[in-house]
Length: 110
Image 1 (cartoon, rainbow, N blue to C red):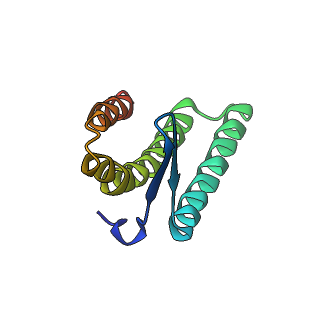
Image 2: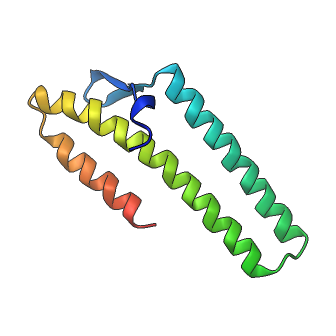
């Protein structure tokens, strides 16, 4: 995947209920930039609706925004699989597989 050079994600676990992801500064910047762009797209969609823009044009912008959000999710999922999931499996925690399956199901609902 194109983001391989950006993924340097480590998860730390202080308890089974309190997991945390520690993304590198590069990954955080990348994700923040993408989310700022998405935020702008959302504001743009709101403006299109307020201006009574043709529905098909608004829907096209919504689809582009959903695609951008999916890209953010893919980057996070890739890092999660390569680090957090691998670490937990290496520690013998097979419950992480069920967690990942639920997460993937949520992503596929879109």
